Image (tube, rainbow, N blue to C red):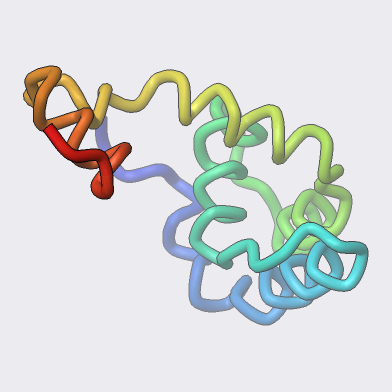
Length: 103
């Protein structure tokens, strides 16, 4: 996959992304990183780019991100991620989950 056409605007969009991340934190969704928001925009909202967008359109897209859409995206990404425990045998997994359990 090549570089997304809007990637060149990341630095200029940081203040807007920070504002949106702070908004989500204020309404109780914890710390959402600027990079997570940018990844959502690149991989979901701007997935199909047909023309060069103007700066105000990028800002509008950032400011209109709905928390539900973002959380759905993160949930799907979590399901797509590799299984962290794939290379761990059952005994090692038991030790990780129940460290105080005696054998």
